[in-house]
Length: 256
Image (cartoon, rainbow, N blue to C red; front, side, top):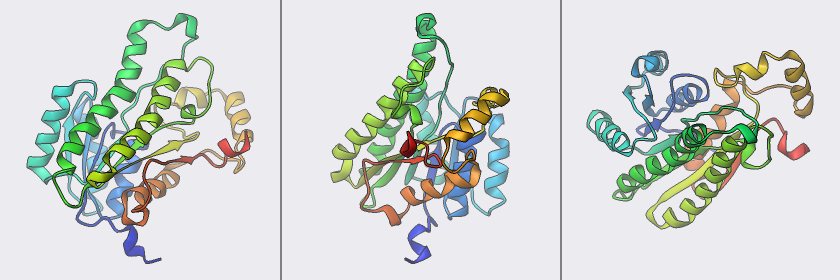
């Protein structure tokens, strides 16, 4: 297999929620593979670190403040990126929000924020990108960031699990509908990665030790683990793969 199959030179990738954590790691991995990058976050100034990392690799990086739950904001951001960098080839729906709470205490505001960010935002970003991708012979690639909760139930994470289960179903449905347009839709399901969003869990040493023991590889994921799967799904190496979700979890799902 030639390394050129994974070469993304000349491609343009948009990553939502890319100011830190998984989104930043994904942006850097795609840039390392040759892609130019566009990134979003609620606060544009928070994207400076990601921008610097991407540009240090010799790639361009456009940034934009953006609320994925706001449809007008999605259209405006896509237009901004189109003007600045051109039509997108790769969309990574990474923006996410999580707040754990006993289900009997979940309030409507929290439910709406989690579902709106994780599921609604991913759908309407995909729709906007697909309208652009479908006009080109080359089509495009969409990658959704699902979760282990797309497959298993986690107590106190019902809104989050509902959103990520829905995202997996959306991945499959859109892949079937848009294949004829030359658009592939896949997903990854990250396992246990220590990021700013999940840091609170890892502060509990007893929890961290217990969880690490449940992972067959006996370690948590890091930045180098997430990039390979995304580059693979974004590249021509996966040209005949659509509607799939790759768990990046050290064997966790396979062992339960």
